[in-house]
Amino acid sequence: MPKITCDLPQCPVDASVLTTFKQLQLADVNCHLPGPIDILLGADVFGEIILSGHLNVSGLTALESIFGWVILEKTKGISQTIISNHASCNAVEFELDKFWQLEEISNIKPYTQEETACENHFIQTFSRDATGRFAVKFPFRESSDELGSSRDIAIHRLHQIERRFAKNPSLFNEYHKFMEDYLKLVHMELIPENEIDVPANSSFYLPHHPVPNKIGDKFRAVFDGSAKSSTSVSLNDKLMVGPQLQADLTTILIRFRMHKIAMTADIEKMYRQIKLKDSDFQRIVWRDSPFKPIQDFRLTRIAYGTASAPYLAVKCLQQLAIQEEQNFPLASKAALKDFYVDDLMSGANSTTEALDLQAQLIQMLSSAGLVLRKWASNCNELTNLIQEDLRLPNASLSIDDDTVKTLGILWHPASDVFSFKVNSLSLEGAFTKRILSTIAKTFDPLGWLSPITI
Image 1 (cartoon, rainbow, N blue to C red):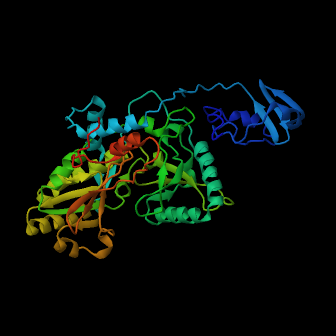
Image 2: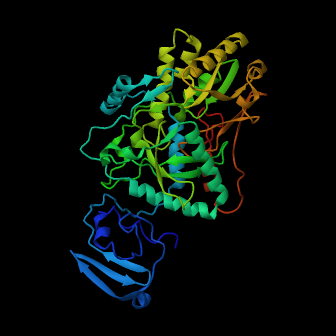
Image 3: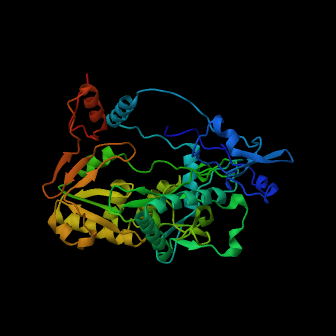
């Protein structure tokens, strides 16, 4: 049985229940916080577990067990969790639906009221420091829902990853280096003790954990902006997501291949190059050893995992293009039209123009603290001008859509040809369904393969 039930309790319980029995040794000191059920014991062993101790105080009951004291209480919090049990074999249908969406040409939609408000908020609150780097504020929704306490949840999640680190010391070493790098670059800072205690709705603690990274580093740290606070409201619940600012990948790919000289690059650690003025809403807890006290930090750059981060990063890039249009006309146009999030796919019709575009892009982005790396081109003159550590390390560039599980397109700059990543098909079992599934997963927005399903 991979999972016994959902996390219990389903919503955080007032921590005051612990003070009522503070003199007792509890079986679970975090019993007031939602958490996974580790083991299910049958009624046949109940009598052997429960001891003679029994207390009733203020409507609360405490039973003594061989594991420690167990607190019983009717949960007063209201859970917003909706449980729905539905069994359906629709994986292929879902993938086909995403495939057909790629085949359709999207229409430009007008901004919603919230998207317009998000745009106005950015214009009114962004700034650039003395070095040219952007600083932004979170676009909060106007809502009666208030953030509650979130530090206890963050500590609980820290204990979980510490148990994971105990089983995988090499992962801990890499994660520790990541945190040290964050501190060294001043992308996070230790919170002074006199600033730790603030109203719950004026700060938020982000749980964090490592996830595998398919390119480059072995992992990346993800900060969980969707973790619920004690009021069952998360930071992401309070943030506006913002409008889609960039063209879809199909349009960018078409424009990319209209150029005789093609070039690609990406912005190094794009999110971490943008300062956040609301850093108290990006607090974390961390320690480099489970035997040391837990410390409170705040992230000073926008974090991966917060709902507004993609919008804020792209908006800063486009605002830079608007502000620098007179100084860098070629780069300004490319920044507005030829970026897909942090990936550049651009070009020119002559080597001279391509060299000018490349130089302008490097200068314009560096004026805001942004560095272009992983350069690739079908023109050797362009790549030879770039220092080796900023060139694409592989012979081919993978182009795919991270929003769905896809098998992407590969561009080979040296030969200037495209190919497709596809997995070999097994000839056993339901062969037709596997063909259908593979077709649906193949990222082919321009219809080069043009598969037909009957």
